[in-house]
Structures are given as C-alpha cells and as structure tokens.
Length: 447
Image (cartoon, rainbow, N blue to C red):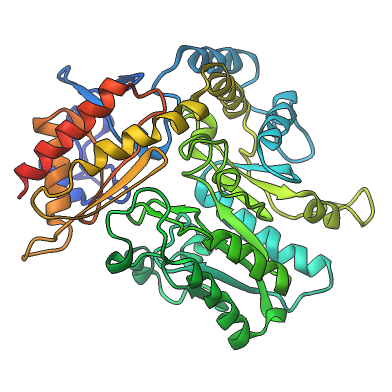
C-alpha cells in the first residue's frame, strides 16, 4: 500500500516536523525556529553566521565553555581507542580514574561514585540507593521520600514525584505513593533583591520536623533538595537553612541528598555547593558540568558508610541491582577527565568565586527597569522575575528569549516570566558587562 509519509530520500531538508522537542512550545518554535550550528568558548553561532553570547552555559552545563580543545581531543582519542565497554561485570580504567577524581573534590567522606548518564538518572539512582540502604540495614519501613515545593529533580518518575514544579507533574497522574514536600524557601516579600543567600528563611527547614510528626521518622528514607533551586527561577537557600536541615535529618536518622546537577563543578565558586555551605550530605547527585556538556554523563556521590552497608553479603553476589548500559561510558569518562583538568589548570572554580561580586553588581543594576519584580544573584547565576502579561503567564518571558536571540545576539533561559542567566565560567569582565547591557535592552523591549 502506498504511504503518504515521504521516504527519507524525498525528505525536504530542514524539515522540522518529525522532531518532538523537549520542554519546548513545539508549534511556536517551528514557526520561528532558534537554531545554532556551532559553538566556541563563550559563543554559539547560528546557521547564518551570527555569534550569540552564551549567557546560560547551554543548559546550565558548559561550565568550561564550548568546544574546548583539550576536551575535544580527549573525546576523539577515546573514540578511536575504546568506543564502548560493558558496565556490568566489566569495566575500563578511566571509569575508576574519574570516580577517584570526583570523590577527591567532594567534601567529607563522600568517597564512592555511581555513574549514570544524566541528572534525571542520577536522582532516581540516589533515591533507589536511599531505599535500598535502609532495607539492607533492616529498616524496610523507611520508604517515604521528601522533596520540596518548586524543586526540580529531573524527569524520571522518582524525580518528578519528589519535584515540586506543577507543570512537570500534572500530566502524569498519581506518580509514587509515600512522597511529601517541604515548603519552598522563597518569599518575595521577605527576600526581594537579596544578593547571595537571603537572610530570611532558615526556619523553613523546621517543616521537616512537622513531616516527621505527621508520618513518623521510621517511615522516612530521605530528603532531597537543591542547594540552589535553579530551574524554578534561581532560588538560593536562605542562610542557615541547609545546616538546619542536616541537623534535623541527623536527629531522625533520615538521609539527606543534595541535588547538585546544576550547582556542581564551579557555578557556586567551589567544586560543590555543599562545600560553600559547610554541609556534608549523605549523597550528591551531579551531571552537566562533569563533562562541560560535551558528552552525556551523571552520577551520585555516596558516603562511605552507605557504600559499606551494601558490602556485607557474599562476595560473589551483586550488592545493588541497579545500573545503566551506558554507565561510565568511555567517551564520557574521557571527557570528564579532560574537563576536570581544564577546571584545575585554569582555576575556573576560583575564578567564579572571584567574579561573583562583579556579577551581582551588574545584575542588580537592572533594578528599576520596567516590570522587574525581583533580582536574585548567587554564585555565577541570577534569576530576574518579570511581571506577567495580563493575557498569559510566560508570554513576556518567551518574548524576552526571542528578542534576546534575534535582536541582541544573546542566549538566555526563560523560566515562565523569570529570566535565568548562568554563563560559562570562562566569562570575562567585559562579557559580564555585555550580557547585562543586552539583558537591559531586552527587558525594555518587552515592557
């Protein structure tokens, strides 16, 4: 029978219909697409040759900048040497080398690394490890997981269950039973135009005591939070909040997981935000910056005591029935090692810490522009809340993204009506000024 679908050979070049884009208004995009064709250092390049200043590090991930020569060379060498090694019952040397390098960057006794391929997989892995840990310890009743309102933990079923962004959840039914949420740490009336961590809000951690009173500690396995809730609009943890959460978890025997998929690898001025706040969680999830976005990779850092709890049975038996075909993929490990070398040799974590005051000052200069409701700089990130248009939430944000791309050669993130910026850590002083000059023009244009 004849098919109405054209053959591959007859396909029209640049046909946009077949690709169902993630987290994108597909129909709007395909009417006016925003395409990039290449990238280098701080810039993307469009198919027609325009250079776009990258104000968002791709998707919070190209921390070392784009197409860095040492990372590209490492990937090329690895592809020619070992394209794939099975992750179950076999391994390759770079997996162990990268795990030891990542563990050396982590605080405390976060000494073991379980590799996966994305932040979403990292979160689901951490949640499964938490449940399995209590199980092997004889505490099988600890099955409840606690997230936080406005939290983002990827798009696996576990991640969206503990996540707290309504649009990520509402289409998918009941999700998992036994999940509860802490309140969001953001209150504009108390925190507006804070630079760095807000003074108000540490007491919100005490809501965990309330959940313990409601459910009993014997049913709660773990709490997962982002030190900086980035995907919901850049919400920094209030001063003292994470320390208070750690103390409450310790009191009740609850594991504490930091989701550092975005904050890991320099964006907060150190290897992990846990170091910035002086808190050692029981697990840290990471992805994005581990390879500077060049090859998909994620992982979970796990404290020694948790790992050791699994190493008690017969030596010939699998200790944790979990993993992925592409865990510790050779190309990802090569990219990760080269990326860590770039971070170290160029002092990019220290650079981010040094640039933070200048970044914050440039961001706060936008205060008073039309429709600006709040500005929240922390680390090398900032969220800028714009008032919604009367005819729809998110329209002004999308318009700003389009104006930035087409009229001002700037790449930024729009989260509803919040503009989010987080440049590669190689950003120069002049480029910080250029980014915010362009953002000011964008805000005025969408007034």
